[in-house]
Image (cartoon, rainbow, N blue to C red; front, side, top):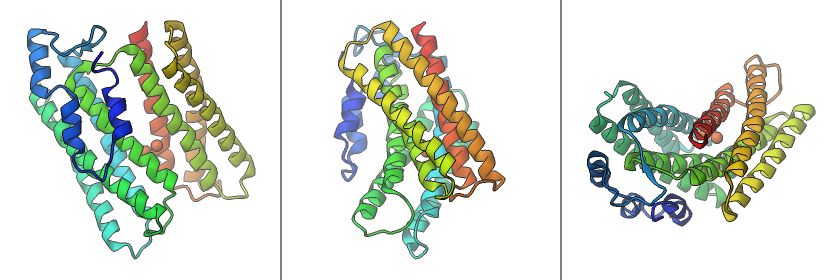
Length: 309
Ligand SMILES: [Fe+2]
Ligand SMILES: [Fe+2]
C-alpha cells in the first residue's frame, strides 16, 4: 500500500519556497527506469496488491490528453494573472508574458510529439519542470498579494485556485509517468475532492465578477457554489470512512449531475458575456476557460465510471 497516498501526502507537505520540490517528488515515487523495468518484465517490485500498471497505449494516450488540456490552461493562467496585475508591475508582467510564451510552445510540442514512449516521457519531464516553475511563481504572487506588496485585481482565492490547479497537473503527470494506476477508490475520492472544490470556487468567482446589479445571476451562481460546497463535504467524508462500491458509484452520479448543470450555466454565461448582454468584469476567455474545466471533470467522471464497472 506504499504508493496509495504518496501524492496526497506530498501535496499536503509541499513548501513551494523550497526549490527542492522535484527531488521530493522523485524520492517518494518509483523512477522512470524502475517503471520501465516493471512494464517490460512485468515484475511487481514496488506495487501494492491493489495497484496496477498502465498499458503502453494508455500511458501515451493519458500523457497526451493531460498535456494538451492542462498546458493550455497554464498558458491561459499566465494571461489572466497578467490582466489582474497593476500596470506598473513591469517585472511581473514580463514574467507572465514569458510563461504564456513557454506554455504555448510546450502545448504546440504536445501536439507534434510522436507516440514513441521515450518522446512522451521527455515531454512529460519538461512539462513537470515548467509547471513547477509556474507553481512557484503563483505561490510568490499569492504571498506578495496577501502581504500587500502587490496590489491589483487578482483575488487571493483566484491565486490559490490557479496554484492548486498547477499542483494537481504536476501530481497527475508524475503519476502517469510512473505508469502506476491508482487504486480505483483513491482515484475516485481524490478526483472528486479536487474538482468539486474547483467547481465551487468557479461559481464564487462568477458571483464576484458579475456587476452588483445582476442580482438574479449572482444568486444563481452563489447557490451553485453552496451546492458544490455540500458535495465537497460529502466527498471528503468518504476519505475517512471505508467506501463501498455503491457509495462510490453514487458519488460519481451526483458529481456528474451537478457538474452538467454547472457547465450549462457557464456555457450560457459565456454566451451572455461574449454578446455583452450581461454586466460584468468577466473576460470571455475566462468564461470559456472555466467551462472547459467543468468539461474536464465530466470526462474524468466518465473514465472513473468505466473503471468501476
Ligand atoms: Fe484554471
Ligand atoms: Fe479553475
